[in-house]
Image 1: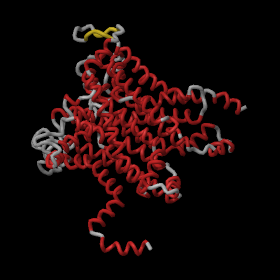
Image 2: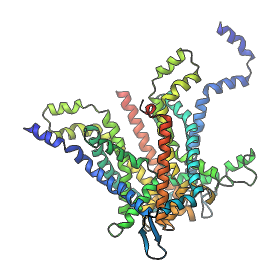
Image 3: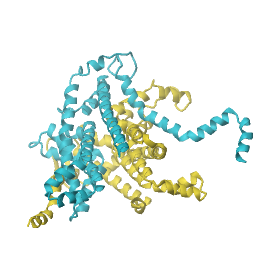
Image 4: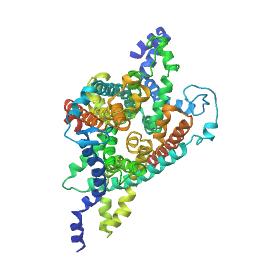
Length: 289
Length: 284
């Protein structure tokens, strides 16, 4: 008797559990995307006082690309560079923690995520201080002639890439660590027993096995980096602005909603396309295996 | 034989060669230490400059040591209310998001049902959308609803719950996947009904994951700037928005004080957790 009741409820239970959260995501994630799409096809002018009207204005998309090609290119160039640097810089450390960390692993991981506990904006402002014209870094780089006398690091693309790299480094290092940590050490030992050099064992065994972490890390870094505008705003200059800066100022400053909405969709579409190409290039069977 | 060769070789080795060998052996360790120095450098800068006594409006160059920024942390108009608002929103948003997320995680791990793949995908989607798109789309929604929900506390809260839910689902799911269901079956066999089993067995076992989700959501919410900036309207100021506004006209050292205070609290909590985990691991 009780069992019958139990079974009857069982069919509905998962949906009841899901309902509140899914409704929230539907109402405040999916529906807003629809509004954004709708807005991106509106035309008109807020200055004229009539607001915007929906007119299938596909022209918003082409003029966004034509008018801001540089910003789009820079977004993906900076994000790509920062992702690559973050990967190269943090891989050895993730490796070191995973294989040599011993009982200090948890503490070392805490160091990795430590920057996250200082507000993003304050971290970036700290880089403003570090890279400032009379700061130590500029003096050092001038001394070794990497920066010409009187030259600056702040307000350049280099500073923006440096800031993005730093800010998203934990997103790269953590998944790398997780995938390296899971590797069965005996596989590496086996390779060495079979006379593979340490380097060869790394290239043929360790690195391929850590690929899921590489993929996760690069995606987790690249996606937010491509949409970022804080680093370009605080560490760059208008010549190093990214598409995020344009979207932000059009939405919140100029209230040119249709153009900004169109740019947001283009940004999302390019990211999606790049991710798909990337996933195909790396091979999904490697991700699941 | 090799040891003999080594003994013959040793006196010939110069200090430089010995240093080279040492360097080669420890290159990864040395590199890692440099990496951590780089990672912690900005935090050190923020901490040091929280004791600065700047002459102008900007806190970029060292002018002298003072404690007054710490004792007068709320001397800047608006900073205290901004901090309080951030904490309030983070507290409420993390509780709602963790609640919703835990229920969803239970459904996703425990039940096979039609639409499970789609649900997983929808949960994953906000995590892989750039923040600026999340903020922009919510702004267009709220622009159309501004007569119902005015920009401010509620719009920020709604937004924060939205991007926290997915993090909560992922965190709790990870714990549920490794869950031994025999424990629940045993409780049921002993006559406990579904609700009692959930209360007495399931909940205590997934409590650490719920706590982790709560803390993660809190940290993400307190720190969020991009989405908040889009949906806050003009009169509602959270701490990150305060910092953003300040960065243009003046950067009082009190900003550093609050940044470091948050940092110390968070790191202490995490360290406590690490110590606890180590002790538990030793006991097991």
